[in-house]
Amino acid sequence: MAQTNINIRIDETDKKRFDEICSQLGLTMSTAFNIFAKAVIRQRGFPFELSLEHPNAETQAAIEDAINDRDMYGPFDNVESLMEALNA
Image (cartoon, helix red, strand yellow):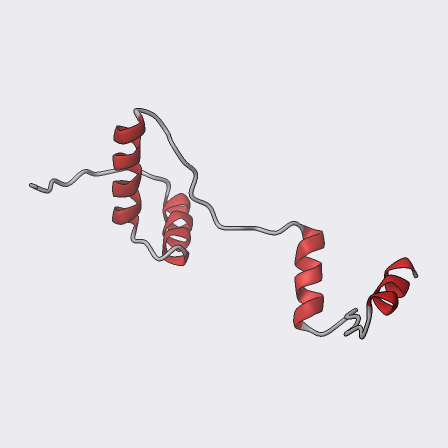
């Protein structure tokens, strides 16, 4: 299949951000645009969203607590001990 080039105008800041996200997803910008184009053709419209998970503030705080071994409970030897801690 023959290849062709297209030029896309995009804000410089948006390009940098887009490239960073593509890199984190393991894609080049060219690959991302090809995926998008093929999906649009197949679905005859905008079919999907590619995004990175971004936890909310509460979840991010819990992740940081777990990484830093803060506010950790257990291990529990039995269900009664677990329930006692949960109800406290």
